[in-house]
Image 1 (cartoon, rainbow, N blue to C red):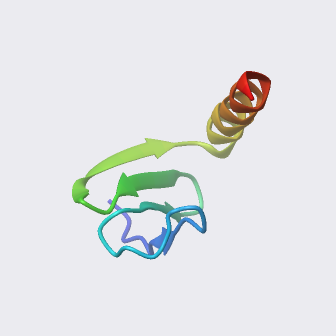
Image 2: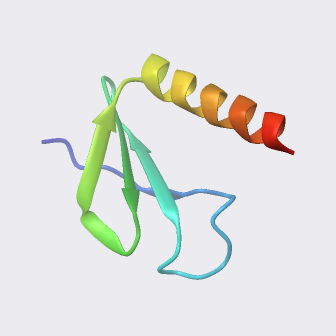
Length: 63
């Protein structure tokens, strides 16, 4: 398993234990929540892009 360098989401706020973190290797993206760092979701760029696009579209439509 690759070692990741985690980056905190800019939308996560300033609390150290209340953020979403993202890391990338050559072939995969990894996501985790800082208060559960051992639970990691692995995905590919196209799938994450589609998920974020869907969330943004759905959230914008509800406003």
